Amino acid sequence: MKEKIIPLGNDRSALLVVDMQPDFMPGGALAVQGGDEIVAPLGALMESGLFDVIVATQDWHPRDHVSFASNHPGRMPFETIELYGYPQTLWPDHCVQGTPGAELHSGLPWHRASAIIRKATDASTDSYSALRNNWNPHGERPPTGLGGYLINRGVEHVFACGLARDYCVAWSAEDARDAGFSVSVIWDLCRSIDPSRDDALRDDLDARGIAIVTAAQVAQLLASACE
Image 1 (cartoon, helix red, strand yellow):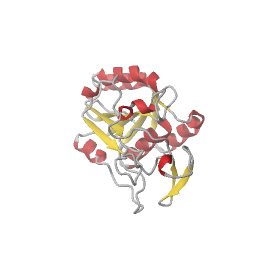
Image 2: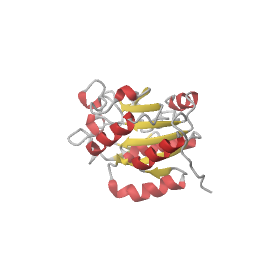
Image 3: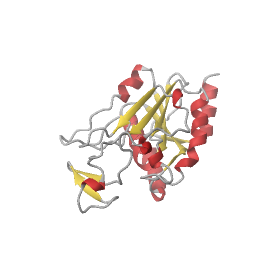
Image 4: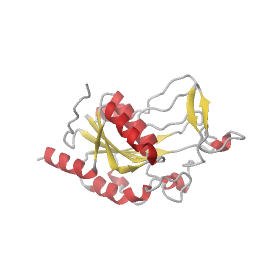
């Protein structure tokens, strides 16, 4: 039976802002349609004071990263290969360490973030989730350390948003749920690489006990919890 999820007060809830970087914006190397539309409302939520803990993730690839199609001769972006026994999507080069496209989006109030988790820094391993890397050559998914950080901060509920909904946001939400947190995805503060999969994604998240909420609902719930 699916657990009923009740958001907690702002001292026990964290906002997880996933991969808000220029390369994922329209015109970027791996553009997510409509990614720019969520910048302003997300910035307002970050500045609202409703969250004591805000964590950002930042894709931070070396140039020879295994997930880049350019590092697999004869392969094209968005093809799928098998890597360490698991499917691996090959991506256009994006969010390369030190490039402008890898920076955190300049339109968001990053001074509000209490931690920044850099992902995919190991050339041999991809990393979608904020909490665990993808499978490595040993068949393991090593933790990033974020789960322990959130526990140490007293967080029990994670609100996830950002880019892209169907990859890094979804994987982060699922891993947070598996780690024992209650989790909500702020649906209107996400965009997907493949929006045609959104209905199936909602069903999958719901089946895992992950709530689907809007930014307005988050503000209302947390404001009432703090009264």
